[in-house]
Image 1 (tube, protein in one colour):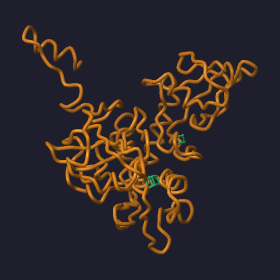
Image 2 (image 1 turned 60 degrees about the horizontal axis):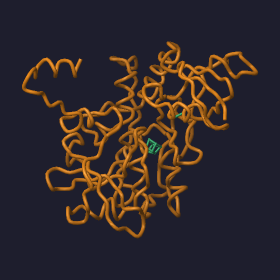
Image 3 (image 1 turned 45 degrees about the horizontal axis):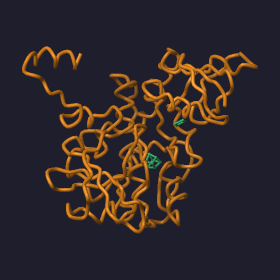
Length: 322
Ligand code: SF4
Ligand code: FES
């Protein structure tokens, strides 16, 4: 075990643990955001730079600071290491610049994007972004493409995090899409219009941090914050059958995997559960899903509802919302 301090909070973790995972063990606001790392996908991380942190002391043996900010998702901790995240003005400033960089080619189409309300980039922009843009250049434009019967690709919104590529490589039996070309010409594409119809291809939608890959069976049906996320399960021969059913009344609008406090799926689910079972009678509803991360969904009336007592209702609400 090695001892490390992150934002002045000490923790002991196993050797080889990354700074990001050590911070996740502590939890709360000191956890760096991650747009490309995904703990269930081997090799992910190191692409987006949103998780940069400052290493003020490299280790007990070598107390010198690291000369540059490092990607916390791919830097292992050392014994005696001291890391600064939200306590470093340099990190906060740099993260702002990273958000600005990610938005250089990302359209500001949240009002018509199905990912709005659960988009990692939207949340990141809200917490770290600037109010204005400094660019006047036009953004890259691609026509929306159907990739397979269930998935729509909006390449305009892609931040090239590679997560969908790792899903296709690691949990489907055949990858038929990838990133073509180099630099600012890079784009996600299926080679010669191959379709993605593998049984687990729908998981690409859930791992996509932005609205580049969306569910064709749900597109434009509802804003996510109008729906109630419910834990539901069914007997399935292909996956665990444990999902989140997004409901309006008794109607199921969409099925997704269950996401944890870091926005990652707890388990990957099959396409039959995701796209083929939308009847209320298909599922056993376990109860409301707790959205454990800061999100417009958890901030809605459904979660965190403040129930004022009769004694001092306005005073209590003011206190809770301050
Ligand atoms: S489509 Fe989504 S998951 Fe795939 S690389 Fe682009 S942003 Fe990442
Ligand atoms: S999450 Fe670390 S570089 Fe993207």
